[in-house]
Image (cartoon, rainbow, N blue to C red; front, side, top):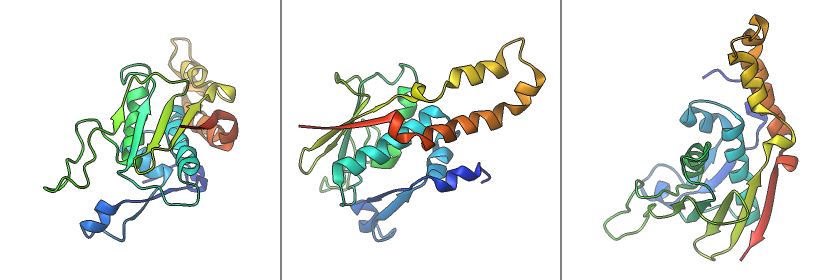
Length: 197
């Protein structure tokens, strides 16, 4: 798959998934690149970038030097899936953490490896997302504010409005991905993480 070169500069998210090891896929170590998430989302935008960064920084804060345990992380989102692009954020976070509502893997006959009932929308909190370790109940709250550094709607409007200039339409794909690149380059400005109880 062809993609902008800056994708390769973005830190990967590495987790351990015991289901993967149990089923003989590998040793359980899984790594997700931003390009992997773009493939599953079908596009790269400020929302997908933000979801990736919230997972990257949130899991770092939650697990420290340990590998995050995929399938044992509860994910809660403040907004309902149909509000703005929260559903797209939830899909990205589900791909990375393994958390699902009622549609995920239900586990083997013993009940182990169940992924259902670990992803929730519309949860009251002063953050965009909360990640909870199911083994320790430790939590981190993560918020994403891309408007601190970019204005995705302004770039989009420059290419779709009836009076859009031809040069703006032609340059839109490059300008749009440069905007995504700016989000990643300023992750400390757009992502905030707070540990909770």
